[in-house]
Amino acid sequence: MGILQYDKKILHKQKYEIILHIFWFALSVLVVFLSYKLGLGEFRNPRQGFVPFWEGLFLTILLLISILRGLIIIYKKSSSYEVIKEEQNQINFWNIFITLVSLFAYALFLKILGFAITTFLFLFILFWKMGSKMIFALVISFLTVLITYFVFTYLGVRFPGGILGWIL
Image 1 (tube, rainbow, N blue to C red):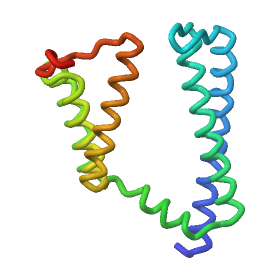
Image 2 (image 1 turned 90 degrees about the horizontal axis):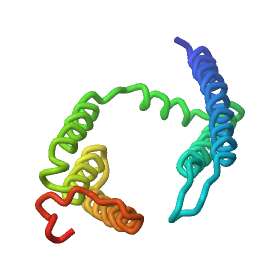
Image 3 (image 1 turned 45 degrees about the horizontal axis):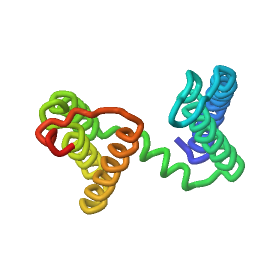
């Protein structure tokens, strides 16, 4: 396959992805609008539209970034996009297997070990095995568990304590 044909194939795929993202963008804007009509409430006293509103807004922002990125790639016909696209097409079944086993183990050990330990181990394994440095995986996993635990306990959510139930 010639380089020109390869470029056309990539650009065609990119245009298709942009059209798909525009559809999801419109749907997420609709979710934001309808959830706002339901009522947001306050952070300490959320109403029905609170969570869908913020999820829809987050998705809207991500899709807008993705659409703009796709348009830039199409108009620049970037050669770096070819390398990125080739890397994305390679499926690493080992990472998929580790993710599935980790999810199963997370569900299995959540009550036994508790939220803090299980979530820390789960995140650490995923970050580390997906290419992050070990120290980065440790720090990010710890901070994520810490922040999540304190935010949700402040909101009144109780997590499984597990073996640390007497502390947490």
